[in-house]
Length: 566
Image (cartoon, rainbow, N blue to C red; front, side):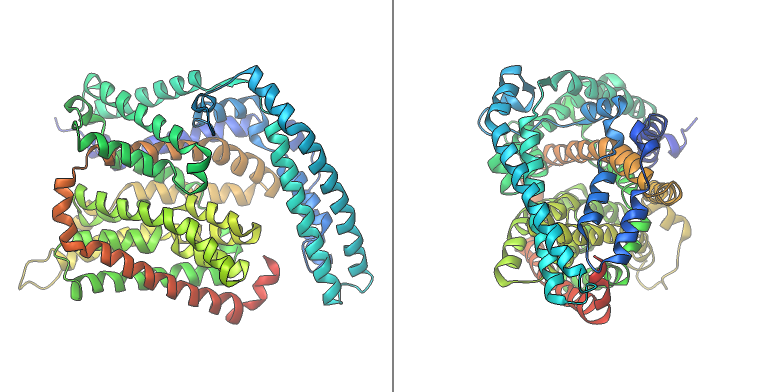
C-alpha cells in the first residue's frame, strides 16, 4: 500500500516539523512567563502618551521602551536553557576554543579588562542623559515649536543613546560567564537526529542510512558557525552561509562526498523547515506599521524587477534554461535563498540551477552588506532612505539587519521591516511561477494554454502553507495579547530565543548540503559563458536604481509625513 504524500514529501514534513518546533516554543514561553511581566506597568501606553506629547522620541519615551525591552521571556530558566540548547558556537578572536568553552579564568580576565571601561562608559552615559534632559526641557519651554531647540534635543538624545549602548556592550563583555557549549551542541544534535531520522524513516530512507550522513553534515555546520564567529571574518561580512557552502564544495570537488553521507544531504528538506519557522517572524501588524511607503517599495518594485530580469535573460541574453533564469530572477529580486528554493520548486529547476542561484546570492549579499552602508555614508544619503534602499535590495534578512545597524537604529528598523514585507511575497511569487510554468512554459506547442489546477497544485511548494499559517498565527497572537506580552513572550521568547536559532541551524545544514551535492563540472554547463552572472549583475543594478527611486518617492514625496513617526 502506497504511503500518503503527507508522510513522504519534504514539503509536508517541513510543515509538521516546523509546526512542532513552533508549538514547543509557544508552550514553553507562554507557560513560563517572567514574573516581572505580571507586575510591569503598561509601558506601551506611556510610550504612546509621550509620542502624543512630544514631536520626537523623548527621553521618557526611550526610558519606557528600555523598561519594556528589559522584560524578556528568555530571562526565565526555561528560556535560558532553550537559548543555550539552540545557540551556535560563540565568537572568538585569537583562540578558537573560546567559542565553545569559557573558563573561570577567562571570565575573570574579561571582568578585569572591561569592568573599569564599562564604569567609565556608564558615567559618560549618565552625564549625557542629564544633558539630554536639559536640552529637551529647553525645547519644552517653547511647546516644542522651536525647530532649532527640537533638533538640539534630538541630537543630545541620540548621543545619550549611543553612549548607553556602548556602556551596555562593555558591561556584557565584563559579565562574561564560565560555560561549556559542547554538551548543548551534542544534545541539539541528538534532537535533530531523532526528529529528522524519524521523518526520513517514514518517508522511505532507513534511519541507519541517514544517521551516519547526518553526523557528517552536522559537524560541518558546527565548523561553519565556528569559523564565522571569528571577529575579523565576521566584521567583513563572511557569515556562516558562505563557509557552510565552501566547506561542502571543497569536499565534493576534491575527495568527493562520501556515498554514505548522501542520504543526509537534504537541501530543500532543511531549508523548507527553516522557512516555516521564518513565517513566525513575518508579523503582519509590523508589516503594516511602517505604512504604505514600505509596501510600495517592497510590493511594487519586486514584481517589476522579477519580470524584467526574466524577460531580459530570455530575450536579450538568450539564457537557454528558463528555470535557471527564473530562479536567479526570484533569488535576486525577492529575498535570496528563501525565494530561490520556493521558486525552484515551483518551476522544477534542477539542483545544479538552484545551487548556482544560491551561490550568486551569497557572494553578492556579502559584498552589498558591507559596500552599501559605506556608500550611503560616503554620499550622505539620509538614514531612513538608506535603510529602505538596503531593505529592498540586499537579499538575506540577516545581512539586511547587519547592514542597517551600520547606519543607525532608524535605518535598521526601516530596512528590516521592508525586508519583512518583501518576504511575504515568497508564497505569492511561488504560486505565480507555478501557474506561469504550468500554463505557458510547459504547454505543448500548438496547444492553447490551459490552467491545469492539479498540475499547479502539484508544483506549488506546500511548505508555503506552513509559512503563511505561522505568519497568520503569530500575527494574531501578537495583536491579541498586548504589546508588552507580545514583545516579551514572542519577540524575545518563542522567536528571539528559540525558533530564530533553529532557523539558523536549518539554513546552515541546507548550505552544507548544497556544497556537498555540488560539483563544478556539473555547474559548468549552467554558466553558459557567464550569462547567469551577467543576468544577476544587471538585474541587481536595475533593482538598486529602481528601489532607490521608489524609496525616495514614497518616503520623501508621496508619504513624507511618515518620517516623523519613524
